Image 1 (cartoon, rainbow, N blue to C red):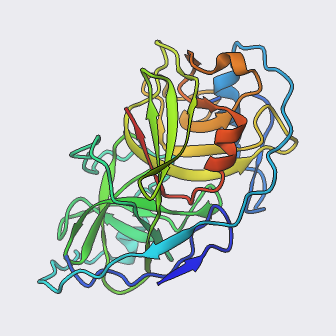
Image 2 (cartoon, rainbow, N blue to C red):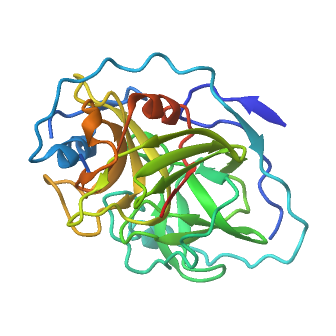
Length: 310
């Protein structure tokens, strides 16, 4: 029950829904999905490079190998389902959108931010209401796109008819519940997970629980640390024209010390860096700088895949 992805960064395997249960300055980039320039990426690119002499950009990585397979999410046993609170259209328009630009004040926090997840990721085919709890009040809307790319978020808890997901908004570790009834949600399982050890300054990629690669990386400086906890790959952005990194992988996390940077929301990203002397050091504004080989592998990982920062 698997299908090959049609693009490296947008998992498209159909799956049955459960029946129960710093930022781093230069130029404005463009998304890989060819939908024009995105203001956020300019802020992603600028923050990690601020106050730093930026070396000449390396060549862009070669085309990615064939996209990975994603297995279908399992069905859960039938059980009584708590019905969602109806949301009239007038109220729906007043709910905040759960994006990297938003601060959501009424959503629950991640109750277990250092617990590994099993790789389930969810894509809303249409904008979906986010609830504080099953049967509880609506608190936000999860749009079907993020930064002009498809929205994929990881599932951290399941109940009959409901999935609890990580959200890309402030505060860090924001979560919310999606009602899975009525269709409109695509659920798959990503075989990948990324681990970043801040103290060891090392990034490791796992595929099906096997180590696929491990590299020394640069992390946030003491005054602008890389935020810890579980998060996920939110978006893939490529700067046009090229800058010091051919790709920026925005995460669903933000700087804990910078509310904004260069006018942006302070979104954390994984990105390249041409000076190898930076790897193994704590020097960025919160982003994680990775070697070219690591960036090539990361570029193949589907959006929504979990990232654990410890």
